[in-house]
Length: 217
Image (cartoon, rainbow, N blue to C red; front, side):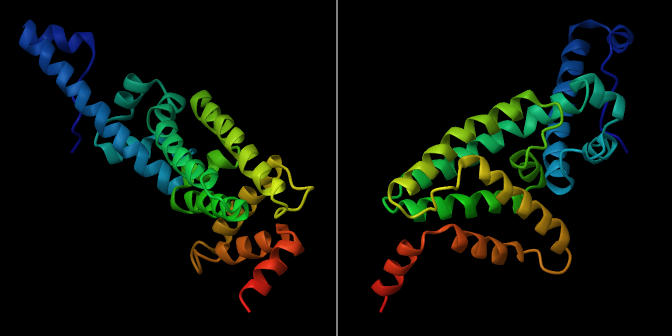
């Protein structure tokens, strides 16, 4: 049973009067909130390319209502994903840049971003460059690039990250995580963590690793 009601002008005419108009607006607002909540769930579970009819079904409204309220996938993505992703990226970036040990900041930054990928497919696709027609989401990921540059620069400055690694190389890390998540989702959804641990070990300068090793003896 669908929760939506007609939102067109014809419906207002049939019902008539200010109360009917207010009721229609209330119905439209409820439908919009249902659609946004359903979209956030479906995008998280199935990614940004999830069928819009699945979103409408989960919201309890018609596909026509979805298109009437949002016009299509791009505006629906913009309504639910960019702000949520931006908040998480800001949190991760603030933590990483606040670490006195720049390697800890870099490694933690990478691990936390990969955690975002694992917890939300829409975040993972955005971080991997998959932002289908969403300008706001593209802007959020572009802003994240400046944080990445600073995190990498800090690690280079302290001599703990190999010099030839660039912020652009983080894309390879995200692609690897995406591939690992898809390959092991059913059997071992945390397998990507082992791969990231090996990758980070390979990126750390030997002198930094040796200092830590001798310091624990």
